[in-house]
Picture 1 (cartoon, helix red, strand yellow):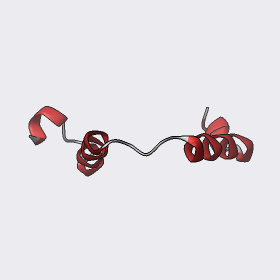
Picture 2 (tube, one colour):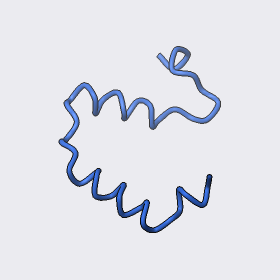
Picture 3 (tube, rainbow, N blue to C red):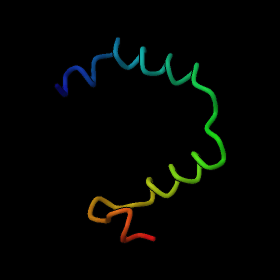
Picture 4 (cartoon, rainbow, N blue to C red):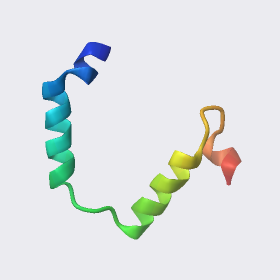
Length: 48
């Protein structure tokens, strides 16, 4: 499966989809920022 994720053609498809996507709303951006700050051993309900 890792090979599929590193395939250059798949990467190009992902980049193209991301380029077409609209910007996140303020709420979505805030939630994403919180999720990205979480470490691998933290849970969302414990971080709050």
